[in-house]
Image 1: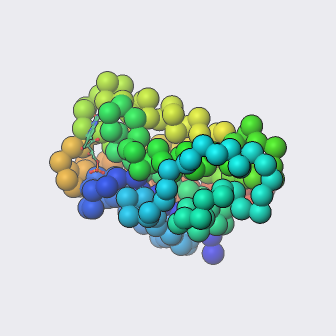
Image 2 (image 1 turned 45 degrees about the vertical axis):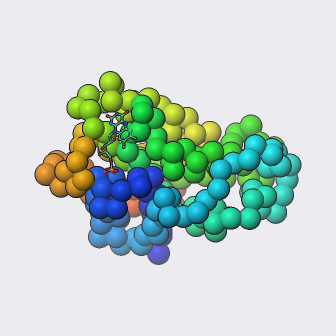
Image 3 (image 1 turned 90 degrees about the vertical axis):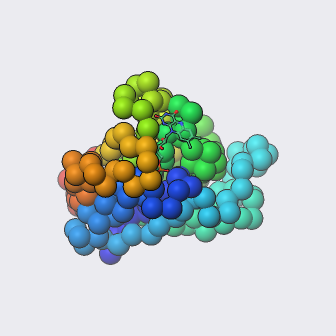
Length: 201
Ligand SMILES: Cc1cc2nc3c(=O)[nH]c(=O)nc-3n(C[C@H](O)[C@H](O)[C@H](O)COP(=O)(O)O)c2cc1C
């Protein structure tokens, strides 16, 4: 059975990002897949220290001995990955940025076997913002930043869900967004199945 790893960059429990990610997960599991969930705020992952050890070939992607080591295995074993973050000051949350920095071992500038290890993996991206406008809110800036990272490690953004909501759980009133997120989960499952069958990508 194929796995979708759901990475939540919001610190708020029952927040808008979590609600939309749950919908993506529902679409994926209803299609026949299984999910793994990572709540970055509680994960205990450390900041990248900038040691550049990952520029040399190593058995593990990163020399830090922290929970990210297990997360690497989960991500590398996934058929699809969905990242979700609220927009915080015109960019991703600090939790999500910390996570993205820890993907440095997989960049296309690397000469190790970890370079572009996510080649062909479909990513979903969920962005929530308080402002109503996707440009002035900073959602577009966050999208561009995260897209560059995903493409640098070999992945592709197969589905983007972005919508405005500010209060805790407010997104529940947005049926269109909930449905779009569920559809994205089903799409990620289908994308992956097609890829495995060699019909796509
Ligand atoms: C520190 C902080 C910074 C924020 N910065 C922005 C911003 O730059 N643009 C925006 O539209 N909303 C901003 N917001 C609003 C959040 O994106 C919004 O409340 C969102 O619904 C939070 O998602 P969550 O419920 O998943 O935590 C900010 C909120 C906080 C707490």
